[in-house]
Image (cartoon, rainbow, N blue to C red; front, side):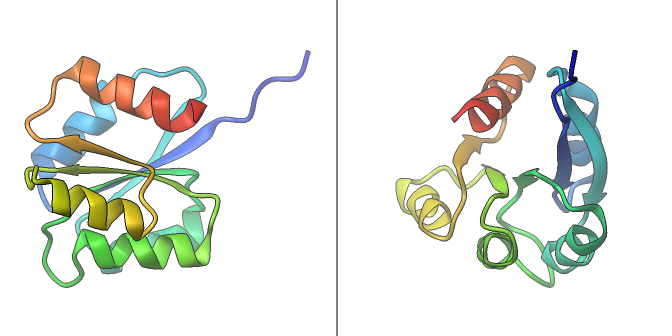
Length: 125
């Protein structure tokens, strides 16, 4: 029986607490945590090496923000699925992220269940 290929998860957030929480909380089958970046520049460097299939992305970060990084990641790999996780909960922010290529949006603060539901939806859609 062939095993389903694992999704490769990269977490991008300038908060160490959030990065560790997402890494620890996600408990979906066939999702492998492969790395975490503190900003968009690190995320782009890591993407070349790690080839994530799913990414969680904060929007407000130093050096390169999440919106710019979403666009760059999708340009490099149109198949990557990106879940924006942000405290910026206004509709225009979410629409901008989706227009740049994000596949979903989750507001901070979030529960463990909300995170897993959002990641599951990202994988299944």
